[in-house]
Length: 618
Image 1 (cartoon, helix red, strand yellow):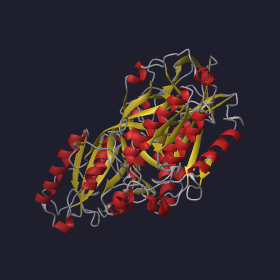
Image 2 (tube, one colour):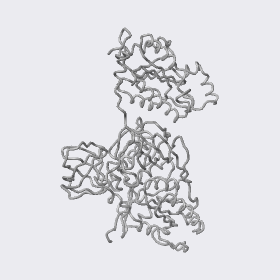
Image 3 (cartoon, rainbow, N blue to C red):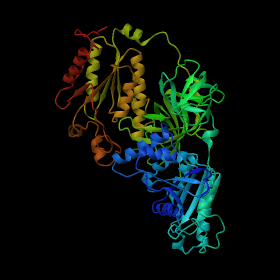
Image 4 (cartoon, one colour):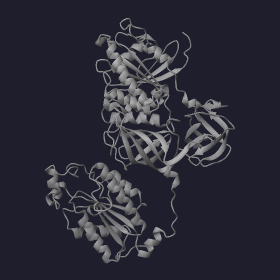
């Protein structure tokens, strides 16, 4: 057997029962088999497939598999390898069920080709379009459509032509450079390896010939040098090259700071190297001692990456829980992890028609176009230029589930046009003028639990002591600042985000601010806590049972919710996530409001916010 020319990575996709497994089995049986067993070990699979050892692709693969196992479902991607006299192949087979669409995203970013299977009896279905759209967003340059089970439709030429025309039109709109279509029968082997006499009307290539002639992308070798730093020690800066090549004497920059130096030495497990390229794990020694930590990117000085803390990106939503704009998520890109939030969901992409649809949220398998804001500046490349430094995943901060995969389009200009204005009068000076120590008392609990009543009693006591305070009440704020918001989960997140920012400003002004909001989600209460310094956020859980709140029902809201006249009401139609470790717990069903206020005042004294005489410890 001749030496194979090169390696082609392709991913199979399409709807369930399209015949992917049968087709792969046919290819494995009828070609020279190298490795045909499914790889159970994640690390082995990633090495063979070629995913980056410490980048977002592998993180996505591992997190997706682990999340699926935790939820009791099987989402593993089967990797298989075979070769012919012309080429070696690695195929990644992801399940075709709708709920497993995220598995395509785990492997497609390093594929050279997407093989979409369509059942000739069913034609092109929504899942075929969805997988093609995801493959396009992930930068796969070429798509191959196999119309399978032609034997079950009597080798009908007209049926095949109709399927080909519909899919080709859609694929070209998605921007694929090449679209090949082959009618096959995986069961009989027709047009898989050998041309079939059952379809004399088809004069194109067999499926294997189309795979053998497909060009590998090879963009990582030709791209600019990029190495996300994984480890820093006395030996230098270690990581995996994800794009381009590096040589001793080459000028490099460390992004995002863009401080420059020169490569003085390249080492690996095999010793010193004269050059290193994409896919190699190396250690670089630099001529200068510059500030570099894990998460920075070493890059070619003449082709540096961009830097930003805001960007636009395509996002594939992969979680059962809907996307909530303005919620904080962890973002992993390369070796760097930051906090991120989607500030603007610009549109959702309808995968069947490719229309841009207005949306307030994204659900499982949805694809959207969003603006994201980060808590720190990162180095990046547009995904179409360098996929590894242009891709990311979003992770839920509480469950550690991977909820989305994203592809960066471009940085937002406002990220570089804005800067914080220095102000001479500080928070400490403002607080000293008022002779008090500012903080946020954040009251959370069900409607009717007694939050506002208790907060009002506390503010009266503070005013009597000469303290400077302000009470932000949920209903009052909705008459003004938040009058444009409804009561969906997405609106509730934005409601709390705005209030948290206002409360932070009041703390900066030196006030003791009392916030009385249901604030049903832990994630948003944690976001509010992180806006101020440690010790300045006091979570007060007004723990009143639902039946007590419903019996009180001062505004008649529970009655309306039970009658179906009030949607998304917390405790009835929408969930309330009770605090897990609040600073203060108030049992409002067991005590009068003035007693509850006394408990909070005592806590403030005990923890140094007020002195015994009613003043403030300074």
